[in-house]
Length: 219
Image: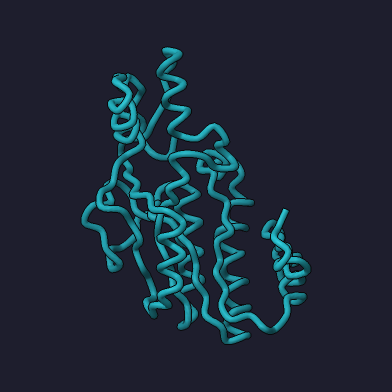
């Protein structure tokens, strides 16, 4: 369900097909002030298996939307990911050269490159705070999954060679509303942790020990 003010103002876009996407974009009215592109294929494990769809959604799609925004002469804001960097995020900045690892990271970086060809675009690199709690492709939530497995005596495989620095959607919304004319912006919290380190922090709060396996990203 959607609020009443959005009635007759929603235009579905199918990123699985470039022809469908281009056709659907033509049906959107002219009175658009800004394009915020937040659609993506984000299930890292699934991205490694469904490679064609991953690049279709995360790389080809942003290129099509960039051309659309450029034709209409409106600003484009592309929500990318800090996963375009390998290893520890600490010390990274907007001029740090990305080193994507895995199809998810590589496809998002190619999406960045497509958007960067438009002078009136901004790329935001971030990790949603909801990644730690509940997402569509992880309905149980990372924190609950870690707690549940620990209590059952099961061991998960959690990567420890790649850190994340999650922030809330409100932080991203505030950043967008500031309308800063930066080609690339990093939006992050005060420190970064690997998923295995995050598990340790969470379990310590409950007086539990982290006995889960360490792994390399992508799993």
